[in-house]
Image 1 (tube, rainbow over the protein chains, first blue to last red):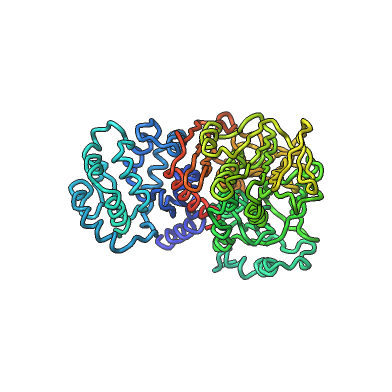
Image 2: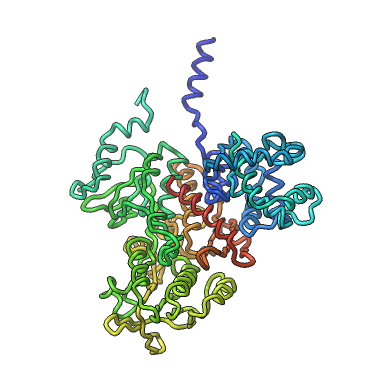
Amino acid sequence: MRWLMSLVLVLAAATAVSAGPLDSPGAMKALNCSACHGFAGQSSGDTMPILAGLWPEYFKKAVADYASGKRPSTEMEPYAKQAMQFGVDDLAAYFGGLKREPTKIASDAAAVARGRTAAQQCVSCHGPEGRGDRAKLIPDLAGQPPGYLKNQMILFRDDRRSPGDDMVKSVKTIMKSLSDATMSDLAAYYSSVR
Amino acid sequence: MSGMTRRQFLRSSGVGLGLGVLGGGCASAMKGDFAPKTGRRVVVVGGGWGGATAAKYVRLGDPSVEVVLLEPNRQFVSCPFSNLVISGVRTLDSITFDYAGLRRHGVRVIHEMASGLDPAAKRVRVGEGYLEYDRAVVAPGVEFQWEQVEGLAANQDKVLHAWKAGPQTQALAGQLRAMPDGGVFVLSIPPAAYRCPPGPYERVCQVAWYLKQNKPKSKLIVLDANQNIISKTALFRAAWQAYPNIEYRASNKVVKVDPTAREVTTDFGDKVKYDVVNLIPPQRAGTIAVQADLVGADKRWCEVNHVTFESVKAPNVHVIGDSTIGLPVPKSGNVANAMGKVAAVAIVHQLNGKQPPELAPGNTCYSWVSDREAIAVVNTYKIENGKVVQIEQKLTPGQSVAVAQNSLGWAQSIWNDILG
């Protein structure tokens, strides 16, 4: 009987088509994302965030906020609406199931060191290495491209990211107190965390 | 084939060897069926934004499918950002790439021109021979309608279009630099539809910016065959406030050029003298699409199924990119890239006897209005009753350095998406 079971298993393995990188519904729905965010959400650009490894619930909140205009973005509002149309659950599951490869954009070591010191004020929310808090939807900053991180800090400072949202009041208060150079240092540090 | 994957088999077979030799450019070897098909094969004609993407994504979707890409150029030069080469803001080198990344995906890149397509026999002609396919992707971009402008066909070396990035881009930059201060630069925009609707207006910004910086007594006369700026209209109008050296004339179609008199003539009979002319000719689908009769009654563009990009005129032939018509999308690089991916997924489904999913493209389009600021328009689409319809279009509120930075991130990612 055991040999029969083995034979069945071998035959099943031989006939099963192994899942390719485009075989999940989320992968196919994510095809438009790769133009900016890279294949499998691994952005190689400085200003485009890496989507691979984003927690599904965080991804869905970001898409909903972009689509509603709460998080204003010329680029993301139409694509967020398309993501909702295609099925945001599939997209969130797809990106959430991928491992984030940290950005390959290297920062100056001195800037990283200064940023590590400056990051003390971020620890209470984002954690000691910027890994965030999934339950509170505080994002994991580690390894995101520095240009993207700095742009978000500027948007918070200028109250152009989620304007009027009390949830992000504290981060905006901190950003208003930071110099442009410190923001660059923080971006360098968090992008370098491995 | 036991103990051997299909890929290993192909690599060790005569198919791989034959195409490897041809990859070196040995046209004389291409006689008859010069690489007989041993499994399922997709032949992609044209390695631009659409074709290169489709080739890569068919391989990603199903590595057991052989993909042959026919592209005469050994290097890929990006049309997006090429206007910045004319103004000297970027170098041509910085927008030039090779096809090594596609080869790493197992795409067999042959640097030869596909000379014909026979949908009935499922063959693509190359040199004196042919390749058989199960499905073909036709992505030949645009061809110029030289005959629409008197004097243009005979003077292609002097009257530059610089509308296919490469040597002409560099040559036009050279002409602009050599123009004396106080000279007149004439830029002629063809009637829609043409490749990259906002492209000519971005070029106006770049030439005007260059002249303002370097030749302040010079003038830029824009002769636009269209009634108005056809893309990002208000944003370009606002940007042009910074360039009093622009003289924009709408509804001025150039019908004649005379390089000896250094003069163009419009359809009203107005004659305009120039020191440098940049004449972007009227356009149609790439020649192979016209010769294979994939075009409509206008003999210019190809209608396709909106879900699979299969030609409405020829089965098993998918047309993508600038050659297509009938979808509410611009002829942009981003759309060609998106079409390449959607078509690749459809082809992989069809080759495996499955129903293709209903995906739709998106368009992200940046235009640089100076050496540091840019504007953008973004469109997304969905499928409704089998047709592509727009979900939303959104424009940047104004021009900014931040948008220009986003465009650099976009470029880095999309070049990698196409070729990496």
